[in-house]
Image 1 (tube, rainbow, N blue to C red):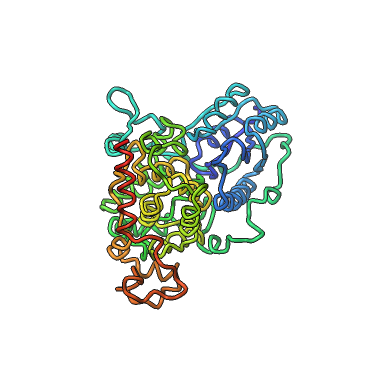
Image 2 (cartoon, one colour):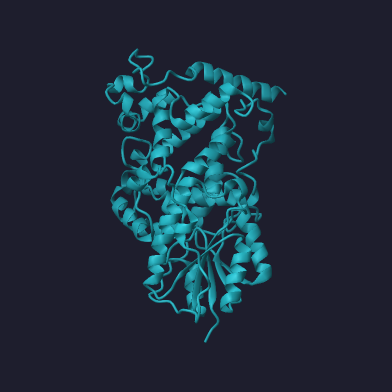
Amino acid sequence: MSKPQIVWLRRDLRMADNPALYHAAEAGPVVCVYVLDDDAPGEHKLGGAARWWLHHSLESLSKSLGKRNAELILRRGDAVEELTACANAVGATAVHANRHYEPWWVRAQDELADELDLTFYDGNYLFPAGHVATGSGEPYKIYTPFYKATRAEFPPRDTLPGPEELSSPDDWPASDDLADWNLLPTKPDWSGGIANFWEVGEEAAHQRLSEWEGDVGDYEDRRNLPSEDGSSRMSPHLHHGEITPVQIWHALKHKRSDGWQTYESELVWRDYAQNVICQFPDYGRESYREDYEKLSWRDPDSDDDAASDLRAWQKGETGYPIVDAGMRQLWQTGWMHNRVRMITASFLIKHLLIDWRRGEQWFWDCLVDADYGSNSVNWQWNAGTGVDANMFSRIMAPLTQSEKFDAAAYIRTYVPELAGLPDEAIHDPESHDCRPEDYPTKLIAHKEGRERALDAYRAMKDD
């Protein structure tokens, strides 16, 4: 009988189109192992919302494996040590893993390869990071040429079927009880809104794709409208690997609409973000453009007013309805509409003049789809600090954005104290002299915030 094969699971919590699982099953009895390693990522260990999702996703995957005569082994601690211990317990020498690009996983992959026979597969993106390169073989830094080069490589690989049954080892290694990991919040349990908003797991991911497929044609027009349910909401399923972008691409490739082309470009953006963190592993902690380290950010650690403003932004109490609606949606559901993500990020960075890393960390803790590559690339784009970024001097006007993208119904949903206001006033009740007493005044006027940000930018440039 063949030796047991270890499958190291991370953000690939699915049965179908899982190359590591597929090839391990061909080689022998399969032992699927998930290790909760909170030390390796440092400040980027899983945030609260992602931990809630992880609990339910692991629960779903465990049931799927059980139907196929297999178990999900859960271990907590150093990933390399725990995987090595599992391999020794069952007499395995081979580990199969889908490649991950976060810097802590790159280090762990290198260390594990020194201990066991580690085989990598590419399963979480359209193409492996580094596959799409310039004519000289260098990785792309700018998104637009990367996107054009990626489209020239289409189609991506074919999808792989999930195993109908798996061979089991003679003995299973010891496993933790999922409940003992305490991934779910209890005191207090703040997850009610998240639980009402999401269905978790591989089956739920495909169900959501099936439901949304008929709407993809309208995506180009509706994706910027927060009041409409035009987003696919596939991002947490993609992040946790309950579905792959390759599966989505093949499911929708027959579409010929502008909406599909726009959505396809966002799948490519996920690949782009991984290429960026491969080139710059510290992208979630360090500005690519070093000049911005000299910008006079307001520091919440030493400035009480900045600390108060940061808390107001986090709680959705800035006095800007579109910003507050977004931040409250984030807290309630673990997700935020993409257009509003840009508005809220720009507001923190430009209007409040608070370092983008404060926002990146808050989103990291609150988003069910918190992704090291996408989160850091998007925040550095907004801040103007990134390798491919918006100019710092381009400052979003949240009041104008709110009205332009018809966010009235969205605001009424997440800022109920404004629900009774008419459309013409709800975007800026203060200027219409109808601000309810229980809704805060603006932290700073738009013009004042804009000028403060531009003054800081000019001072940085003159330094």
